Structure formats: structure tokens, C-alpha cells
Image 1 (spheres, rainbow, N blue to C red):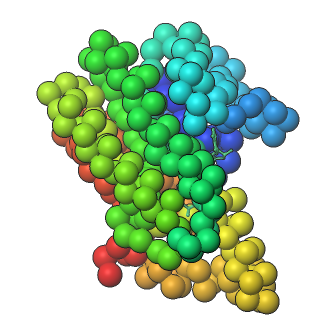
Image 2: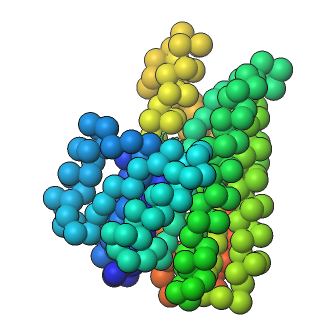
Length: 261
Ligand code: NAD
């Protein structure tokens, strides 16, 4: 379904990004994995992917995506390896929880840089290539928190609402081309980013990880089940397929009914 497509997935050494990278590679794409650096953990992910999908189909394009020059280098690394970039999945993101009154200003700026500004810089880096080759898919992993809010997540909610707005602008500006731009908006997915929040709740409430995990998912997600990285990945593969050619400027929630309430 994604045979021969050349795909970059940011933040793909763990969590949702890794699931998206697996979905594309399984579907026949060439994949540039990304993380800040090729440290030991990233190297073992790269080795595992190359063993599963062939060394010629998987590269590592390191970049701190909050630094515009590094985003350009990431795109150049993928282009040098595969000759083109067909799909950019902008997934890397971070979280910090605190009330607005207590929210550290440096955390605010960091979250806006990593979760929002990087999406602008990534789009700016790939759009000229995609427009020149007459095909491209930009898929931004936003969140249900791009559609609705929760307490304690000021910077994250602001950034994710921004990602959805920015994606609509990109979709309109590319509407007459064979480039599309959409957002996938997961509800709860059990990844390191969420595990940290569950650990924090267990510490704050004097309970256990298991209790807080169940409470977390049952508070917001009517299905009472976590979405999986593979489910997000398979939707991303669909968005890159010819069937989705007219699907642009949309924010698609994969949230067990969270935003239907
Ligand atoms: P995660 O922490 O498992 O993965 C995030 C990845 O991004 C990590 O590999 C991390 O190293 C990388 N990363 C962070 N900052 C980076 C930077 N500056 N440069 C390069 N890489 C960087 O988290 P996840 O849950 O898989 O989250 C992935 C995306 O999905 C995020 O954008 C997050 O906001 C979004 N999301 C997650 C959930 C959830 O429930 N887990 C829900 C909705 C949206």
C-alpha cells in the first residue's frame, strides 16, 4: 500500500512514532527514522528496523526538531539516502503538566518550539520538494488536545490547537496540487510520554501505576481502552494512499469516543 514511498517519521525511536514507522515499513515504504541523536537506544532501534525491513530501506536522520537548521539537515539526509521525500510524519512531541499560574516559562517556550514551531519548519523544508515532484503527504500527529482542553496542559493544548490550524493553512495552500496535509489526533496511547503522567499521578495520589492507568483511561476515553501506536500508524499509511487524495485539511480523532462527548 505504501510500496516505494520515502517517509520521514520524527520522534520514531519510541512510542507512536515507532508504531508509525513500523506501519510504513511493513507496507513497503523506505523509512528515515528520527531522534535527537544516534545514541545507543536509537542505534538498537535502527539495527532492529534494518534487520526486519532491509538495511537499504531504513536510515537514521538525526535532528533536534526544535532547531530549524537541524530539520533541514534531517530532510537532506533522507533525500540523500532515498532520492526523494514523499511523506513527512511530524510526530515528535513533549509534555509538561502544571497549572497556568505555576507553569514555568521555559517549559512553555520549549513545548511551543518542539510541538508547534517544528511543524512549521518541517513543512517549510519538505514543501518545495513535494511541490516540485508533484506528490506529497504531510501528516501531523496532533492530539485530542488540539480539539478540546484539559487542565494542567496549557502549553501542550495551545501547541496542538496551533498544529491543527497550521495544517489547515498548508492544506489550503496546496489544495490544487497533489500534496495533502492532515492531522491525526490520538486520545490516550500507552507510551513513555503517558507512562510518566501515570507515574506522577500515582505519586501524587499515593496509589499504584495500575490503579492510575485505569483511572486515566476511564476518565476521558469512553471505550476504556488505550489506542495503540499501530492503529495510528495504519491510519497514517491510509492518509498516504491514493484513496486519501481528496482528504486534506482534516483533523481525525482516534480517541475511543473522547471528543464525541
Ligand atoms: P514518546 O515520548 O514515546 O515519543 C516522543 C518521541 O519524540 C521520543 O522518541 C522523543 O525522543 C522524541 N522527541 C522529543 N523531542 C524531540 C526533539 N526535540 N527532536 C527530536 N525528537 C524528539 O511520546 P508519544 O506518546 O509517542 O508521542 C508522540 C506524539 O504523539 C507527540 O506529538 C504527542 O504529543 C502525541 N500524542 C500522544 C498521545 C499519547 O497518549 N501518548 C496522545 C495524543 C497525542
